[in-house]
Picture 1 (cartoon, rainbow, N blue to C red):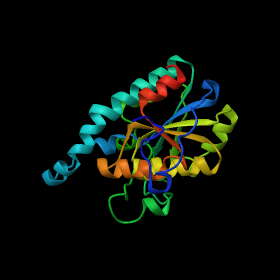
Picture 2 (picture 1 turned 45 degrees about the vertical axis):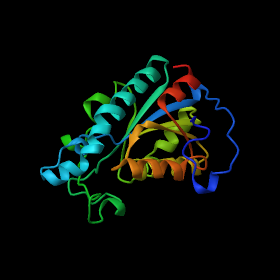
Picture 3 (picture 1 turned 90 degrees about the vertical axis):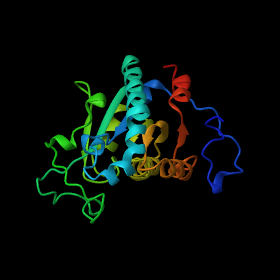
Picture 4 (picture 1 turned 30 degrees about the horizontal axis):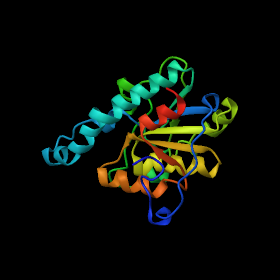
Length: 223
């Protein structure tokens, strides 16, 4: 099944196939979201470690190596690679948005200079690459990324990262609302479970973005 027919929601089950994608490399950037050290830590509780094992396996076996290869392909072609991460500017986190202060799993305190808030070494930015630090789920809403993309002449934004159903989805919707053309790379993203990942891709596909595999994207861009 190709990207033209995959990940169809109820709303688009009978929709015609989209036209072929045409992506101008000079107007296309790769945006890598929130693959930070904190999310790759193994929980101390054995039950929690077992519950998160499928996520960690997907990250190490699929998402991180595939994203790294895509980053390098963009770099080799002289295309922009941009990074976003969750981190608060104040040690006590008072500057975080409400969604990052609510009790529960999402309430992580990640001061910007802490080791836990840094991007994982495999996907670390190269010298000169743009890194935006956000205190919201959306990388567009919480930073000056909108202005940066406009100044770079970017119209097509390729998204990778975590979590598909949270910060990736929020960023996709924000970009779409600003009339950017958005592509989500399925095998460069992950959610807490494969079911959440797949369902969110179905929800956002075709209306807010186009969902492609890394191989399909490479073929279109000639990477």
